[in-house]
Image (tube, rainbow, N blue to C red):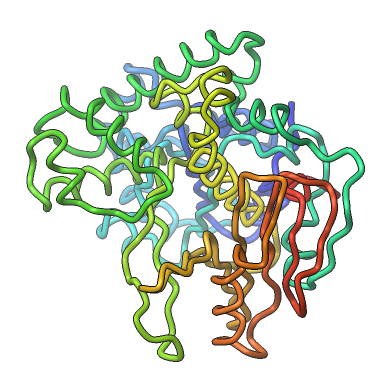
Length: 407
């Protein structure tokens, strides 16, 4: 079993919070984690069991009444249970009573979020990060905000790096040695999410059209969101397209990265950016194999950017820093792929470059950001396919991508 980055936070939350919810993609390892941290006397139930699900739906209050300390897996299949859990907690307020997992973010439902306010802590868990796979305690975020990186002698470069990107982070996909078998798993997974998990949380009018919609989104991963253009791919309206994107976010297939902006910089693009949350799923959805990517380097950029974005999100789940991710782009096309804002207002920028060479012009977005924030700008790193840390003036440097998982 891999040591997960959120493990310490999960154990800590169970000591002082009555309801702890772990949300993330299906098959990311949530069940394995919660079973590992649970006490021996904790009842375990999974709503993937149809008989148990039927009982929960038939009488939510009675179902919860029979549980003292419990782990409930896949709670999004019966969100009515959360109201019954609230009543139970109000009658017996003890830390760690209910440990829940969800493959859809039920906390986005207004009634649920309001009912459990002050009683629940939600932890996000994504597929395996490189640091988890290598059993390394990552230092990237700390180094980023301190501006202290070191060159890496054994950095993963070139084809080896692209192989990692194409694999993604799902444990079951990684257990398959053959690329074709990994992509077969990814396609099967995607079908399951689109036909099963979405039905648990919403009525989708054009369910059979969703695979085509997702393929269209995959072609635009790493680009600005355009709901009208997305909707036209399956002949639905801007509003319906926006709803579908929101639902795909709820099941953790994609993420829309909001823009960072300030009045100090004029003419900023205030449009969100689309990313797939797993580069392996992105590659499989686009039909991108190692050979195809190696023969067409133009395909590397979007894959690598989504991979880095996902790795950074995974690192934020395990850090004590409270960080909010954004992207930055102005109308002069100066951009920063990822902007991390700390809760005290300090920011750091990350630009991703699928090349072994970095030029001064590649840092135009980071420089704009640094000038605008002044003392509130911690550091700007352009992650590249190299092994040396190369300074580009004050608070700016080219940094090996492998620093994401170095200790």
